[in-house]
Length: 267
Image (cartoon, rainbow, N blue to C red):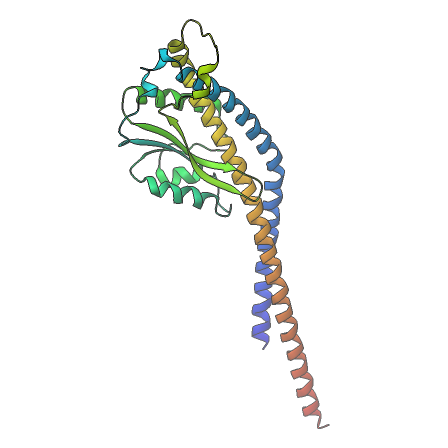
């Protein structure tokens, strides 16, 4: 009986340590959510603006022969896979990797420590991802696509719906999609549409990369807070159950000791 009580005390102490850890990680995630979502919204706004301009350029007849609009047989795909820097974020990383398994033949560039661990490459942290890094990647991606080294480019990232919901999806960049509505707009580009497109394409890819990584990081932080809240509730429930079991064992032990004392006294 005493051995069972000792084991229960050890388990309670162990689960209590886990509870303190989950609470701490949940607080850290909560403190990051506001800043992460603010950066995400700025990234979305910039992405929408540059995407509108590129859509207008892509719809221009002068750009119809641009290599970035060329539709080829989709035999060679390049994906930028954006995952988390750390684990303990619920299904965040698992959802990304589950979708990535559907594109096993794709050439992968990984962003986020967990993605690099899985696919290899230079370690690039999602939380610290900079525009300079995005610009360097954009230059390589654009030059390789123009040279015909692959047939389409996509970013496998996570869409932030709300604090409770995040969805893994693929954002396709190349080939460019024409904005059919933009044809009706009388926009004049100088010196000409094709020159502007070839110049702005790097900014488009870099801006989209930054926006995707920021949104993915906001999703990671939100998923971690939700996961830690759930883990904390489960740990507290486990402690309550173990404490009840411990109290019952203690009560049974005390009753047994009293019975032995009474029996030994000859009463």
